[in-house]
Image (cartoon, rainbow, N blue to C red; front, side, top):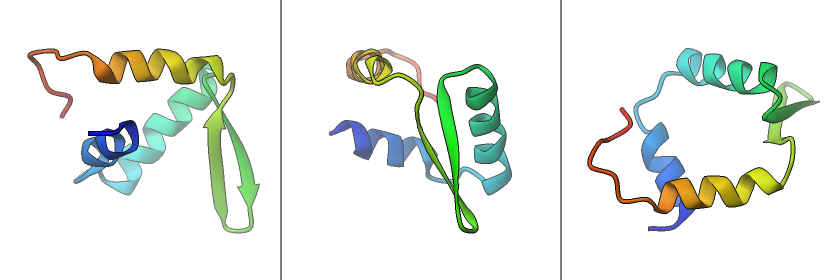
Length: 67
C-alpha cells in the first residue's frame, strides 16, 4: 500500500472537527504551513525533508494501529 493510500485509510471515519484540530496542532508545531485558497485551506509540509521521515514511519510494520 502506498503512502497516500495509508494516509487515506488512516483518515477514514475521522470527523472534520477532529482533522481540523490535528492540522491546527501540526501548524502550531511548525510542521505544516497553511495557505488560504478561497474558502479552502491548503496544507503543506513546512520542510520537505519531513516527507522522508514520514515515509520511513509509514513503512514500519508495528503491531499497534492508529485509530
